[in-house]
Image (cartoon, rainbow, N blue to C red; front, side, top):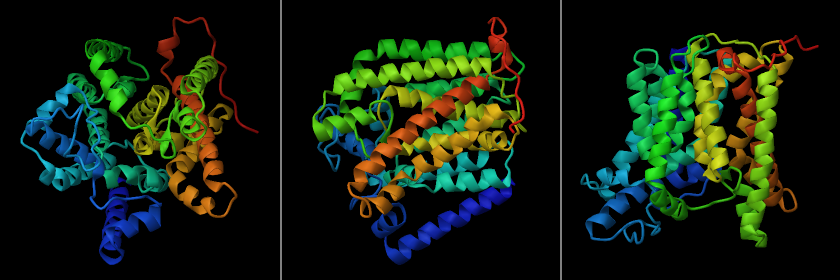
Length: 404
């Protein structure tokens, strides 16, 4: 199955390259995925290479970044200065972006523990969705972190320490990989708990020491609404369009998300969805991918290319979806909403001209879909956790039963 998946990935990539050659680069992105492009490709990678040139020229890219094509301020932690001072410049943009893309596809080919035909189809459908292709077109470094987590999923089966060090390295450069710590979980063994606690402690200490810098990074990070998901995506939209009070709306949405998390926790602990998994790596991949979506959703506002981490959830969600277990109906919901969210840009382009206020209607529907996906993954994440994690809790799980 893996060979078939890799072959299909290769064929799809070749077809895209052929379209670039026959139809043109920008036209391909526009016609197939309804994505706006710039005259210079790999715009997100240019933030890094442009910042390196600005730093070499004596500018502080956190304050003034004249060598970035759009003059965007640098929004990565200070440790990235190791990269900025390595000698790279704007001429490195294309090679670095191509390396990031190649690593992404390599990680995608390597991470699944076991694949079925439906899982292959859905993986391809989301891989070549507008959300993931947005990250490819922009040459975003999240592609590298997808590869890093893929390798960590493999390493944890060989060396826990190596997987731990790799994940900690990711946290140093981008904080959100901490949400993938579910990759250390095991259905039966409790030994992995110490690695989870080490990652949490490390991330907490790092965030505390770098808090002032993180505030600057948050301020410098662009906040989009139409191509974004997260708790504050809606408040950003309402502020930009109607000048609603951003803090007020965001507070309400965070309170609402807190209620949803508590409900997911309650029903997830109560309901037993079973331990249906043909391979432990698929289950760990789900915990990693779902954790990243849930965590980044709660962080506030994320560009849609970060939906690429939903790919980690697909093999296990497919396995759950074919089980006759009423408590697993949320797996079907998670799969459907993952697809709809990933293909939002194309859906937007289709309905924007055919419906009155089509852009707004599709935007609000997409936000609703993202919230439903948040609930589905939160419930499944909690309900699938190893039973030993709740052995000291006086809750009795309700056993699964066949759906009528």
